[in-house]
Length: 71
Image (cartoon, rainbow, N blue to C red; front, side, top):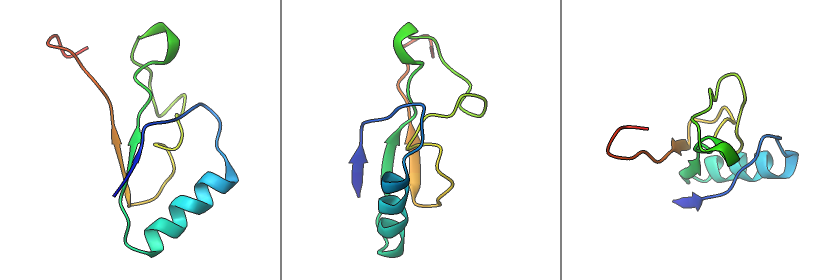
């Protein structure tokens, strides 16, 4: 399991390749979903993709944070 508590709005070929390689070796990547960026408001990750959480690999688990109000 790799913890990938990083991210941004642009994809990166080297990062994508590394996740694909990890997948080929049976490794799970736990990736930050972004948590809304600098404004702290939740973003639509389908509309404004956050990477590496938005790569289309079945070894990625995208995670985010919420508070007691589910925001």
